Amino acid sequence: MWRQVYLRSPMLPRVDSLPESVIVTEASLLAVPAYPGAPEGAEQGAKWLKTGVQAEVGTEGTLWLA
Image 1 (tube, rainbow, N blue to C red):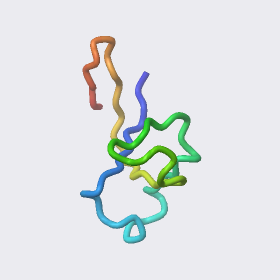
Image 2 (image 1 turned 180 degrees about the vertical axis):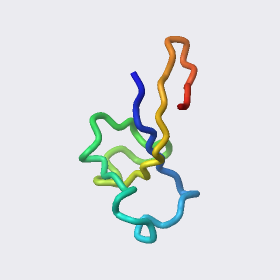
Image 3 (image 1 turned 90 degrees about the horizontal axis):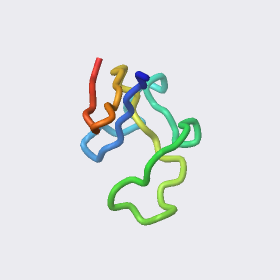
């Protein structure tokens, strides 16, 4: 099943400099894994960038991008 790809990284532009249409909060995502290196419970309501890219993870762990 193909899914939308979301990004969250310190390398992205500041969230407030991006249009609202490309930003998603964790509350609106189904299940978000813990952000690597962040203390547990930190950054509640963190924001993610919608890439517009569709992807699927194969049974062997390969990420397929559409």
